[in-house]
Structure formats: C-alpha cells, structure tokens
Length: 248
Image 1 (cartoon, rainbow, N blue to C red):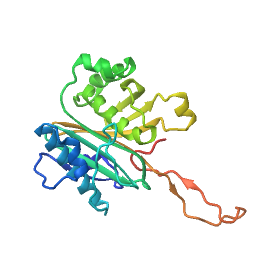
Image 2: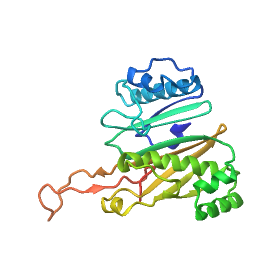
Image 3: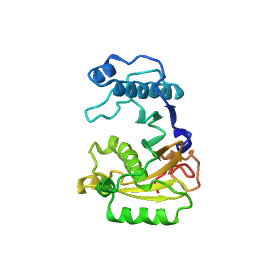
C-alpha cells in the first residue's frame, strides 16, 4: 500500500503481520534487549522490511539501529523512513542523489479523540478539518490523518533540521484528492541557514489504515548544451517537474 503514495525513485517494503523471518544485527538487538515481546516483534519486522527495501535499491543488507532520538540510522548515501501500526510495518528508502527529504507514517483509520486533536492542531487547522468534514465526498478521519501527516513531515524534516518539532510548528492543508501541504514555522536561525520550510505530501485511506508520505525530489541537471553567446561549458539546473513531492 505504501508504494502507492511514493514516487518511483523510492523503494519500499511492508508487512501485515510479524511473520517475516530473519536475524537482527547485534547493534539492533541491543536496543530492544529489555523490550516487551510485542515491541521486539514490531522492531524486528520493521528492520527486516528496511533490508528488503534496501535490496530493491540494489544495496546489501546492513544494520539500521536507532539514533540518539530514536531515528533510524541509514547507510551513507541513503535516506529512509520506518513506520508501524497495529498489524502493519513498512520501510521506504531512496538514494540521496534522488531526493532531498523522505518521511512515511501509518495510523489506524479511527477517530482521534477531540481533546487530543486540540493538542496537535491549530485553530486554523481545526477550521480546515471541519470544512473537509462538511464538503469532502467521502468520510475520512481527518484528525487522525492530520496526526499521521505531521509525523511524516517531522521524519522528512529531521535529517536537515536535527530538531524535535512541536505539533504546532507545522501548519498543514489537505485536499480530498489525497494530497497535503505543510509549512514549518522555522526559527530565525533556521531561516537564515536556508532550511526547507515547505513540504508536499500524499495520503491514502485503505484497509483500515491511514498512510501518509512526504517526498521532496532532488533537482536534476539539464544536459549540457551549447548555446550561441553562452560561456563555454555553462549549464543549468532544472527542478524536476511532474513528480510527486516537488516543493514549489
């Protein structure tokens, strides 16, 4: 399912139970040595999905241990994201030459308690969700979807920002057609450093799950061409058009 909201550059793997077989690397196993059995199964299946996704990029299996803040640590030259929910695990990976940001998330397709919604959504976002409930052609648990989308945005942001975001640091706008946009409220220093503040994403409701993804494709260089009057060897960089996730 997750592949349906990812561009072709991204490889993914998913599992709907914990039946995948394979060992953990020692540095992975050490992270869950004291975890309860359900967490051990969840963690193991997610790492096996990660290795399957890496194999689909033509890369060898490697350990994917958590970093200091729980973020997966990927091999050099790779961006990746892992998510899990009840009876579903998934991983997505891509070469850093192809994308600038990647994040995926999954949540159960269930209503979000109203008191929890107020803790993750601004008044403007709540107003937009009320309008979607009124006008969208099909019913969607918009509050839960907002939660998932903000998680995807955070995962996409973290490799560049290395800062834990508050839910109110991201302002999201959805369309009923399965897309969303996010604008981050960056600090003055982050703006000065030119960190990315705007992201595009896709969402999907299927099989009792809500899935979200954020992908920002890397620009591609136009082929070198000789132009009358142009300096010898001049070339241009062109944004990738028509692809999912390009920030405009």
